[in-house]
Image 1: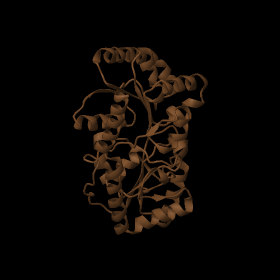
Image 2: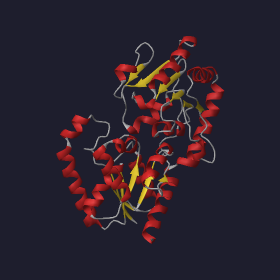
Image 3: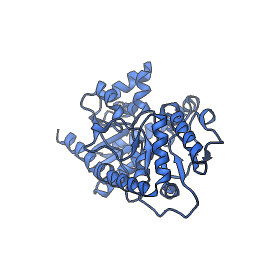
Image 4: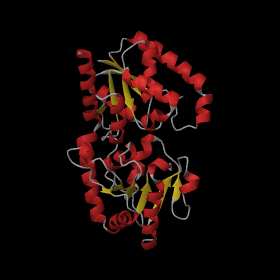
Length: 329
């Protein structure tokens, strides 16, 4: 099958493309690097002419390419298909529904994009209500994890337990809960090292330098090695989902403390320590700090769970099935 994926979001598209290629498909990838959803509104506005030129170029490629499946990432991107007059799939990832549907003009454009799609995919279970509100036939596509790349590596030798806060410092991620949990644990275990990525719009507001050491983000290829240097990962507490970062950490055998509130999505809930309560969260995290065997067991269970439900080849086969279904129809 000849397929094209357009726009990158959190490495979901690239991982799916890799999986589809492994399944024998001819897949072209257009990441659209000028589209940066994490950029400010002002910088996105300044980049609009370049983004438009890029969209026009890609639409020419699609119109001439004879693709059987056009897979567009980000909810409003369906307008490329509408303008180019070709059938398309739309893949929703987060704020493209949570935020954009509430905006007047962008909300209308997003709904039109979803209604015109062959099929609408959404990547996290909290998006079901929003996607199905426009397209009742929307389907959940688990975020694909390359478990060959994100795998357990030997922990470098070092003193003490190291904890990594994974999520961006943004209000929707619940950073205040993560930091409150860490603060409680540091009182009873002052030798624990806690690091956090220096990213997100609210770093200055939430990141306490006496509590966490800010570290720079690293290239995607370096993430498995970075994760191997930590004993425990603390995720997000706002949305109640598992992001790509948290799933990748679990695939690397890192025990996860966070918050997940959609266990019904899976046949078996994720093996993690889930809570939104600061007192309980600090107790759970302290328990992992104190018990190396518990960390190892939880990490092994997390790895096996991700392999079974989020492995990129299994997710690629799922998406492949929806492509074939649309072609047959």
